[in-house]
Length: 180
Image (cartoon, rainbow, N blue to C red; front, side, top):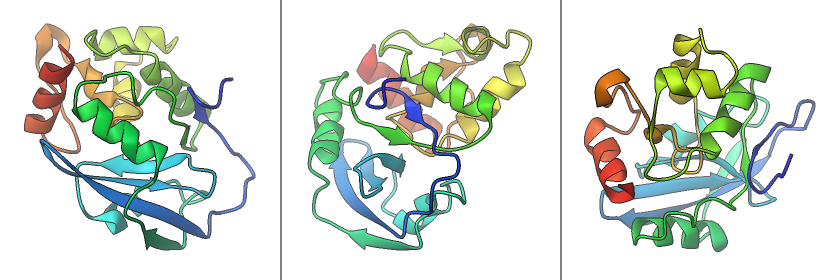
């Protein structure tokens, strides 16, 4: 597995003591990213509430402490570049999430969905090798802590309805229009 592209699973790893975070202003509001000491994204989303994001991280990876930075270097640069139109800027940024086998696989599949080519939940389930598990595929989107970097916004209901999105449907619509 290419760690710079795929979600890395770290079963048995020790808990991150401190995670750095930065808030980046975007056209659709503040975007906060939390990273581990290796620079892998643990959680991210359109909020300025880093503590809320910390709560989304799997308990085995959840940091005990957060430290605010002005920038996270390459990660902050990718967030800015994406919102300015470089839709592939987020692709090489490493992500670290942990869960069961299906969720980790589904998040890897999400990272391979290209900008401008959204899938339905049914198509996503099939790509994740569980064609009859549409609800499980939707759950993978709902439990994704690393929004944007694991682009769950690219999954739609049959017929093109937006479905749900932790950061609100106006944000999801903006992202899809931006990528379209």
